[in-house]
Length: 135
Length: 420
Image (cartoon, rainbow over the protein chains, first blue to last red):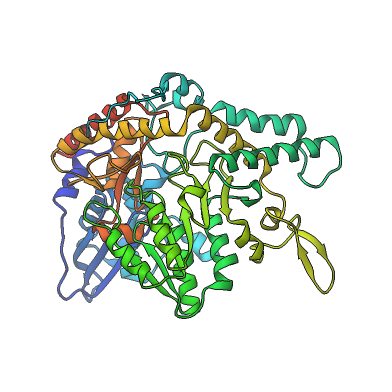
C-alpha cells in the first residue's frame, strides 16, 4: 500500500514548501481539476531579468496534487522563465518518483498546468498541448 | 443498531457464498489481493445468468425487434417483451405498456422533463426537489425551470442527512407543479419516505417523479404503493447490463405526452404533412432499442426476484450494521449521513481527517478494495455537507462481513501510511 505514498510525497503534503499567497506577485493563476475538486493557485514574482525571484502556491486537494505543487516551486525558484519553459509532464512525474494510474496523473499535473497558465497564459494540460492546438 | 444478518420470519439469510459463484468477476484479484467490490452504487457486477441470457440472443436468434416477420425476429421480440413484463412485475406496474426501456435512469428522468415538463411547466410554477438529488434528477428541472421562469425549491436535510420533512411538507402545501425526489440518496444512503411525500405532493396537485436508481436494485419498489406518476432506474446498477434502463409512467400521462425522440418504431404512420405515434410503450422507444440489454435486464430482475429483494435489503442493512461501529470508532473518521441503520441502504460515505478521498481510494485500491471517491454527481449535497468529496463504500447482495472488516483494516493501514 505504501509504495505510492513515499516519505518524500507525504512530507511535501504535510509540510508544503513555499505555501501561502505571495504579496506583490507579478503573475498568478488559479485552476481546479473539476474531476476531483483539487485546487492550486500559483504566485510568481518575476524580476526584470526574467528570473523567478520568488514563487508561492496555495491549494487544497489530494496528497499527490499538493506535493507536486510544493516540489514544483522548489524546482523553479531562482530559475529564469526561459529555463522553466521546458519543464514537462515527465519532469513532474520524475520529481514525484512514482508511477501513477491514468486517473491520478492529472492530480500530479495540475500545478504545472497552473504554472504555465500563470507564466504564459497556456491552459492546456501538460502532455496534451498538441491536442488543444488541434481543436 | 444491533441488526444481524439472520433474517426473521419466512425469509432466510442470503447464501452469499453461493451467490458469489454466479459472479465470475468477484474471483479476480487486484494488486495481488482478492477483489472487494464496494462500488455497486456506481455499477453492480453481473451474474452468469444475465450474461447467458444475452449470449443466447446474440448466438442463437439475434434479429431486430418489431421488424421482421421471420422466426428470429419473432423470438427476439418475444424475449424483449418478456423482459418488459418481468420489469413491470418487479415494480408492480399496473401494465407493461407503462414500462419504457431507455439507456439508464438519466435518460428516463430527462425523458420526463422534456416530454412532459416542456409542455406542462409554466412561468411562475413551483418545482420542489431536494438537496439529496443526483445531478440527473436535479439538473433537468433546474434547467427547465430557468427556461420557462418557474421557481425551483430545494428542500434541505437535517444534520443526520435525513430529508427535512417539515420543510418538504410546508413547501408542498404552498403549492407545487412538480415534485422531483430521489427514493434513496446515492451520496448518503438514506431512504426518503417517498410514499408520504408523494401523498402531500398529490394533494398540492403536483406531478411526481421518483428517481429510483439507488432503490430499485436494493429494496422493494412498488409504484402503485408509492403512488407517484413517474419513476426511473438504471439496469446496470441492478445486475443488468450497461445500456439498460427503465422509465415507468402512468398510462394516462404517457398517452397525453408528446414523444421524446422521433424516429423508427415509435411511429404508426407518416405523411408529408403529419405523423401519428405508435402505441405505448413503443411511442417512447424511437430507433432500434438496446433490446439485448433489455433482455439482460429481464434476466437480472428474475435473478433478484429469485434471491428475494427484501432479503437483499436486510442483508445490506446488516452489512452496514457490521461496518459502522468499527468505522465510527476510528480516530479521525467522519461518516456522513445517519449513524444508525434505520431507513438506509448499503451506502456509507466517509472522510478520514488528513487523507483526501482520492488518496484514500488509491490506498484502498492497493488492498484490492474498489470504492468511489469524489462528489458522486451530487455537488449540491457536497456543498451542503461542506466538503468537496467523500469516500463512498456501497454494498450489494454479494458482499460479506469479512469484506466490511477488510475495509476497516485498510482504512487503518491508510492512516498508518499517512502517519495518522
